[in-house]
Image (cartoon, rainbow, N blue to C red; front, side, top):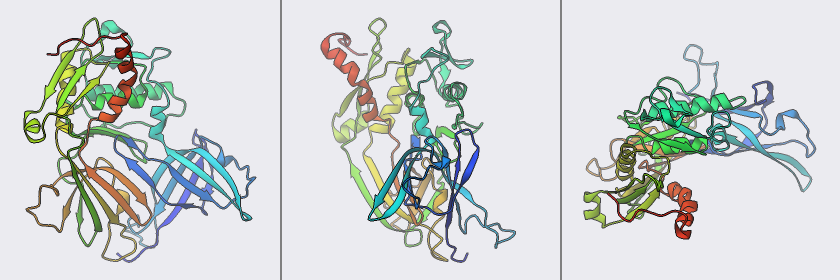
Length: 404
């Protein structure tokens, strides 16, 4: 198709969806889309006066960025361009500035997935919920039993919708399928994001979660076949590869922190130990209430952390600046998979046939993607454990002497 200039527009609404206006005159550089999260911060500059008091600048207003380009053109009427959403979030910060007589406003927006990290999973005033095979989650400890991880993820978002005014995150039938793994788990004072992270760590290997510009939660395994095929010297000309064993962890000591009915187990990957030596870590996961959940956590952890870390950083060119170069960068999402063509086909140690995209740094002219293994969140798990580690060191909690 011919060269087509990209046109953007910003739509502002109240948090309840009341239209406030459109921002035709603005500037933005882009934003990042992250696996196990969603749309990151988007900074928009407006040429407005320092004392502009318009209602569309109110914090928590909804902000939607739409684009029209050659990929959105109607096939029936090429002269008529439709649009699609590339960003959906809310106003979190407004900065007002006068510099050398020039006045402008800077509006900082955040993706709606961040709302999941700002409130606690609860039912009324109860912040401890239990897995339940029939309902996903229950408030009654006596009704706790093993439930499918996907069913629990849907129940987490159901609670978010029930407990939140103007909820912005939802799911559809195929966006959160059953995981095929049952676990007995207890959610204690966890945010909705914490709950999704915990469930991700119980799910099968290569399971991720992501909230896109449509507000839909995806909680599932990566696709089995490549979503995108990127060709060197057509879709990209810049690529960087890093191979590292620094994050390899092939020995896991897992403790559920329960001094009454402790689960303290070790999990090891013999192949990885043979290749890299023993590289261990201790994780304290306090919601695990049976050995089945512990084993699911251990298997997931080793499958995603016992391997050498491979990271590919590639700059994908947008296709609106050339008739025969570039790619539809708006179609690239975290959780998609890809393959790269144009290199030695025997060089499959790096360029495997179906690799997961974990991050997309979007801008109007290009998308910088990161491709790497989906990992179990080792750093996050350790950070969440620091308070309990302090309790262990002070003698408040006692780790079992031996593991099974």
